[in-house]
Image (cartoon, rainbow, N blue to C red; front, side, top):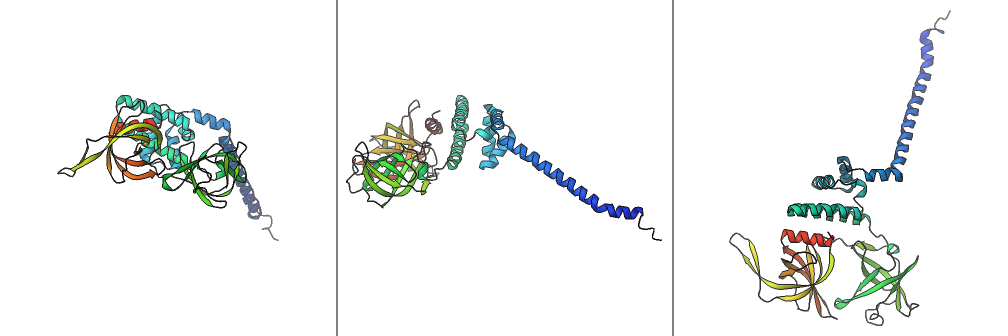
Length: 358
């Protein structure tokens, strides 16, 4: 008689595989439920309602930490941004750091607060962070192709002798771009031939300089009788990031002179402007330097004393080094690209404020 067949032990051994299978199914069900809940949560986070709600709540430390990780801010930059957000009761900076209008307002208010305190070193740190955020934002909004250049955009074609010819995009279609030629360009030695490769530059709405390499397709006359140059579309569009600081056009008169350079016993260097002062045109300016236009034949690697007056800002003086000098053979004007080597901290902050319209 075989009594083991119906024993409790045999029953448990028979039920074990079913128990394991049931546990596995329950586990899979739990995992699936968690995945489903996660997907619902992710969808909710992507909804316009959720994003709008997140934008409107105050910035927290976690928001700053998440943003710092996303755009690679240093610990010092993250702490400074947190302090600005807390002082100004900023909305969620994680969602708004790339919003030019909001960021400008936020930093403007903090600049005015610090200027009332006379905290020039803190103001400089503020503008350095503003510059850093702007550079990161610009890199994410890069123009990848000539297809993305808007109609009405001005393009420049550099030529020998310092000449620069300005074109305007009148049509940007799927296959090509049509440019209106300047009146003094057609028939000159600088006019390329069909299929020639050309290099043009343009400044975006965000004041970023781009270089475009393309080829000429043909020349034609537009409906208004103006000469037009048709060029190929190209993905050879590169953003130029050589400038350390944002630069804006000015157009004011300025004064400058050569300097006497003296080195003290401890190695300190002092600069004294020479008696003869000259007038020039301040073409553009940034916190790091400026460009002066003059008819004087001045070469690079010379140091200058400069007196500058900006709208609604106190007049100031600075010492600069000419890093390049270019002559326009048509106008006989020299463009002096100058890097500041001595400038009062408050004047540098005034330039920042002028550039950002604070």
